[in-house]
Length: 198
Image 1 (spheres, one colour):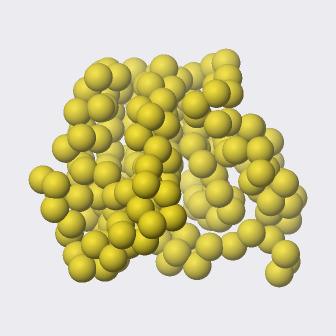
Image 2 (tube, rainbow, N blue to C red):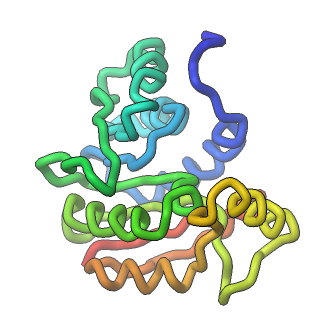
Image 3 (cartoon, rainbow, N blue to C red):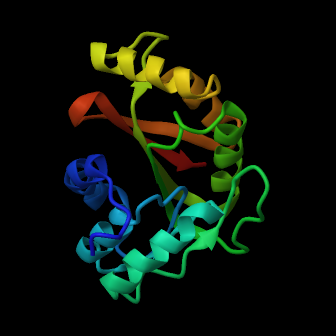
């Protein structure tokens, strides 16, 4: 168990996110997750959303950790994780009832965020929701001193990483047949942005 990938931030945020997802997602169907990371969201959410199947995706280097976590979870509703680099890999060849991504938009370069929105919009059904969790700026301003420091830390690692502006994300969604339906404030100066496919 100790060798499984683990994120303490994911452990903290999973329950507040789940509390919102109950009202946002359909009772049945399959959810596409972009950047499944440690797999903690997938295992936790599927345990509490028993009508949903889950399609994890991530880049190649994270797949073995995901497979190990899901083998321990033993939940048949978590589908085999797929290799998906949004900038180059082919997306799954079918549509999904919802989509989810957490703490990816500030890690990806902007061109990858654009590719994520384009791909999600193509692969969710009309009326489906895409829930994007993480820190976001509002009107170009940081929402907390902690986020200011976090953004500087990101940029020091890679100039293409930074906390994205919520208005830029909203504009991007409108370019891909989605609209920002809700901006839900979450603990630790994060948001859950809820986009609906038109």
